Image (cartoon, rainbow, N blue to C red; front, side):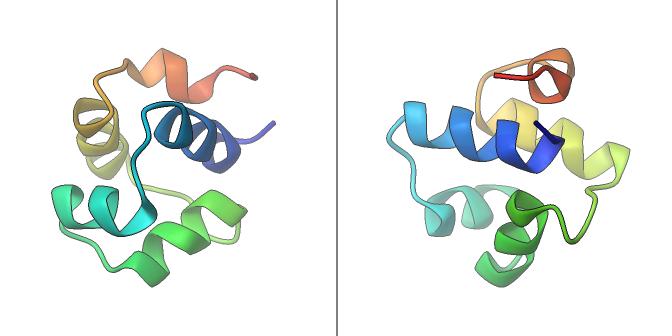
Length: 65
């Protein structure tokens, strides 16, 4: 599983929509969708913001689910 799939899994397990997460991390929903599909890789600073918004660690995002 890639980082995007981990982000999607964690986001969905917390009952959060793509739109809600995108707003929290200041990116478009389209950009978040691309990250979750694996067509774009998030930068380290953006990954840190995603982890904070999902209340998890960077390590959680990197692990297979």
